[in-house]
Length: 279
Image (cartoon, rainbow, N blue to C red; front, side):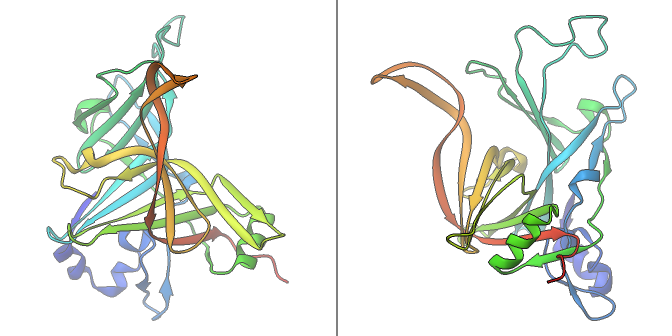
């Protein structure tokens, strides 16, 4: 899950075409000299545990790749679908009464787990070495086999209407810090305005990286967020965080919610899995 620039350079362009770098949507040159783009097939990508007590299987819901240009490293983080806290393999009462949402992210040799109860909790974020959770993780990641880059509104409109699975890639960066990130996820909601000839992506959750400083371990920079965009050059984010509940000007309490949206310059790419219908 962590690679160095030197390791990439050793592989050569032909190998790079099928590597994780290509899979993240970076243009690569194939053996035929063609430029190709890749992404995960999210319907068939999973992370499995290897521990005897639970060979758990998590569905991969998004992937965030962080490029540290100063260190020369590229690290993938896989955000898995959430579940509810449970009495695993119990005889009865399978959901815990004091329940919380459970969302794991794997990368860089660590699990970052978000536990979101109905109240503020000091266990909301926990980080543990990967093997300490469900044994050494086994990654079952599959690339999409046929991808079409959607570069016009008409292509986005037609791919949406045809029911093709859509994947978005949003690149953000902090040049002074030497940090870049690509957030890749399946587009769960796509809005299409035939009146305005506009689209708008609204999807999540994704693993949003804070690129304003360095973290140790790096996985600590991630937060649960949603992303929206309707142009190639910016994206809006809204992050889950402690949020005050205010009623008639009076604060009634604090809980975890998506709040304080913000906008960032970005490079957005839309991909369809499959071919566009012929005109």
